[in-house]
Every structure is written in structure tokens, then in C-alpha cells.
Image (cartoon, rainbow, N blue to C red; front, side, top):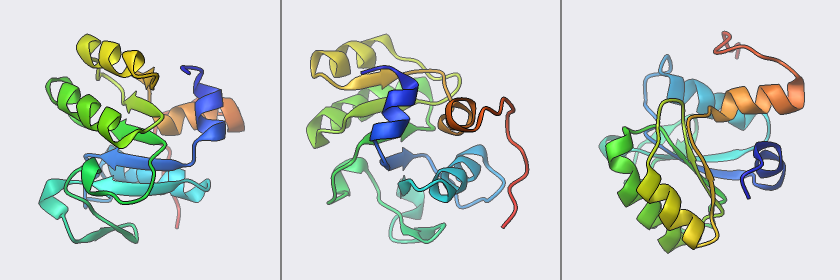
Length: 144
């Protein structure tokens, strides 16, 4: 499954790797936005393990999360993606989603071989806006 609209329609639990405690960072803005539109977003950041980001417990890695994950959403450099892809297969997630500027051909082959969807170089927030709100803009200011 690689149709973005279908992915965002069917899958509502996201493990977001690389979410920051800094509310001005793109990852945190995207997390807050996706929460606002009904997604359960579980933050993954080894440096913030056992803390909370936007009201959710932070995990060190996706394999530490006990509940089923639909989408593994990656805000990390491309060179880290293959290991994340291996963990995505291990936990049985449905989709590996790489944010803007992130790609990994080996990771793509691995997840596809395991019947896991693959999206690269796209922002979950921007794709949600485009497909469901018919908005095409980057990062508008979020109000509380």
C-alpha cells in the first residue's frame, strides 16, 4: 500500500521517530497537528525517554512500544533508516513513512518484501492537508 490518502485514512496510530521536546521543531509541529486531527502519535526519542512530549510518553525505540503501530514516521537522517526499517518489520507496522528529504532504497526493498507500505520524501502533515483539507502550504502557525 503506497497510496498516501488510503494510508492516512486507514491508519491512525503513528510512532514518530525523532520528535523533539522543542515545540518549534518541524517534528513537534507535525506531531501536534496529527494529534489535532485524531491520530494517536507516540513519540520516539532516546534522549527524551521516560519523559512526555505533547502529553504522550516518549519511548527509546519503536520496539519498546507495547501497542500496535500502523505508521512508523521518520524524522531522522537517511543513514539511520535501514535500522528503523528492520525494527518496523519486527513490530509488524503497516507503513514506513520517511519525511521530506529522507530516502533509503535498501529500506524500501526490505519493507516491501515484508508487505509493508513505503512512503519517502513526504510530510504527513502536508499530505493530510492536501488530501483531506485541500490546503497546500508548508508549516502554518498552529494555535492552541
